[in-house]
Length: 501
Image 1 (cartoon, rainbow, N blue to C red):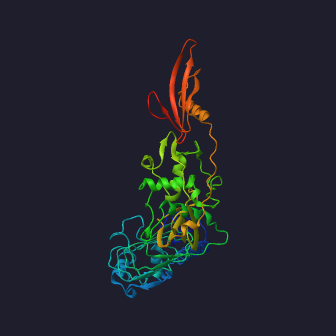
Image 2 (image 1 turned 135 degrees about the vertical axis):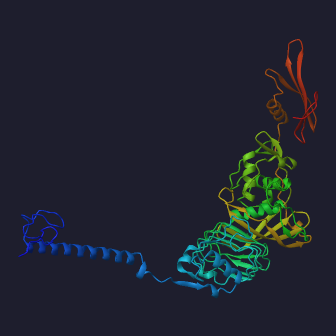
Image 3 (image 1 turned 30 degrees about the vertical axis):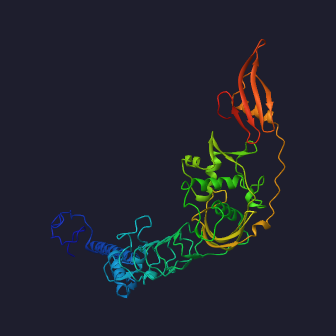
């Protein structure tokens, strides 16, 4: 049997001590059959390794859907099926990333925004200003969270399939019909500059928090549930509408200023009506002594009220949703600045204001209703004015809501000569005033009575009380001041130096 190298299997000449191929010593190596068996084992091992590597490669290709196992791209819509050329071009440039002329499922999933709501409504922001007249095909983009398509000519837009939308911005689009999705996701709807849009259904959007519409666009919302408390909203509307004064037949339209600080007299009326609200009849939530809103103020002297600065801010913010940092503009109204607050007269007249409401609707954080406010002055006319009111939730407001737009008078009915039918409540009997005690208290508070000084009545009539403030020095008196109280106005005049206290 020929000799073979026990390591590499090469034939070894007789007498050779080393393998001519690998150089290993062959003097005591294994027999030829042993070497053959070794080669067989090596071959099996190598074959198994190759099989394992191939199986791993095939498995990876299958797992990652690559190579022969790649899944064919599923087409959602062909660009040729988008009828509007401008919209088709936008999709080709911004959505069809692999330039196949079709929109795939992957591309639909990646298309989450056609524009941004916090960017200007101008070309370059989503679909703005592209000359689009038809958005057919938008229904395929079910991952959309934002659509901005302002400044186009789109007569109809149906977004009912786009249930992931959080923002819809369609200003100045000549819209006549807009359908938004019924979804908890939608929070912002801006659709202004569309006078032909008669109504919009927002009843299926419970999370709405930012709505801008034309005044001519009617909102369809959901009816309030049976636990809904309408009283605070009625109070908000009643006080605001009353602050606008008794309307006349020709005074239809929006009521009051659009925001705080624009009309000092109007804002003063809001404060006056809430802290001295005898004009609201038997309405318990606004009545004197029973005010449900916990406002902080005090009766100074039976004629004047003092309202802390914080209460004034609280009232103004409750109507408008905000309050100016600087309230000095109120100095031009019926409010007089005093240290830490404001003073105002508490006089009122035989007025009555009542409210009836109907057509309540809720959409997201908003509530709208129709109010009929009746004005009776007890002397002449009896006026019923109809208002459209819309308010937005505001946890900082004493009413739980603040006005998001000014109420609008939509109708006025003046009933001649019926005002006298209201019998004014009899004025309470005036309380007996101790004029001397009152004057001493005011003078002392003003620092006009030094320690040890005496206050004597010098003279008194039906209308005045004259007081002498002095110190008894034994041999003479030292006068501290002469003062006269007007019993009708409760004003104290300094007789020596002039001025009032």
